[in-house]
Amino acid sequence: MRANTTLRAVIFDVDGTIADTERHGHRVAFNRTFEQTELPDRWDERLYGELLKVTGGRERLLYYFKDKRPAPPKNPEELAAKLHKIKVAEFGELVRRGGLPARPGVKRLLDDLEREGILQAVATTGTRGPVLDLLSALGSERAQRFTAVLTADEAPDKKPDPQVYEMALTQLGLPATDTIAIEDSRNGLLAAVAAGIPCLVTISDYTVDQDFSEAALVLSSLGEPDAPARVLHDPLGVINSDQAIVDTTLLRTLHEQAALRKTS
Ligand code: XBP
Ligand code: MG
Image (cartoon, rainbow, N blue to C red; front, side, top):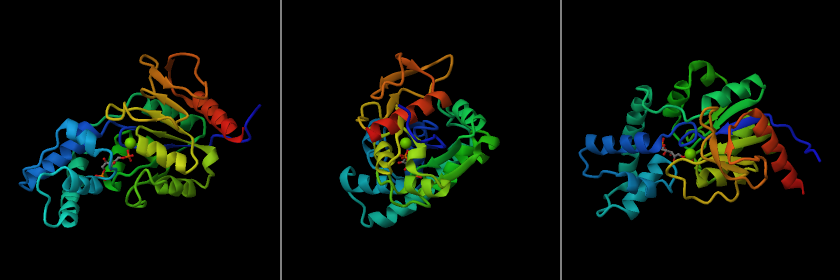
């Protein structure tokens, strides 16, 4: 049986999916912000892993003030807004210095999608400025190919809320069933699925232990010919191996099988 849909666009998450930005990017930028503002707070890798359950940098600061900091500040909203502004600038600086390269397979897949006429879009809870810097780091030609780039600036309701995905679909002018999302976290997966979009998860080191049972496929990365991804969960049976390289052919098969599962 064949599904009556066509894969027309792939919507990428940014943090953890296009690049491994959290441990050596956002976390470092938060700590530089604390230093710059002469606050005693420092987020080590373990604590940052806990804080990541909250999406959005400002919201993460508020959660930390409320639940993790020994002495909460007098005006948490005001302080979080002030710190977040500095943090966004610090993170942008890190990105522009080239410290956060694309994950394996990202550039290869973007080029493959372009050759095959499949649209590329971005749906992220990150702030627009540094997101655009991260996309530019993929190469200016690739960055210009994104038909829709939706960030926290346009979609304030952060993942797992589906708002950013719904806005991406509106800009693409496509129904959810003509697209696939690529995510690295449970919050991202839930956002995509709530918007009706089948989701491929490429885990990152902070999300390796999360529950991805709603995903169409879970891999260790997008894979490269000389370093294929490990297949971690393949509920639709699209891969007959424990290794995979994500390309347009695989995404079309995944898209079709996800559509069939939905209608069966
Ligand atoms: C990523 C995030 C982002 C960044 C911080 O989630 O939660 O908020 O950690 O970015 P996702 P800002 O990958 O699901 O989009 O500081 O710019 O908010
Ligand atoms: Mg992510």
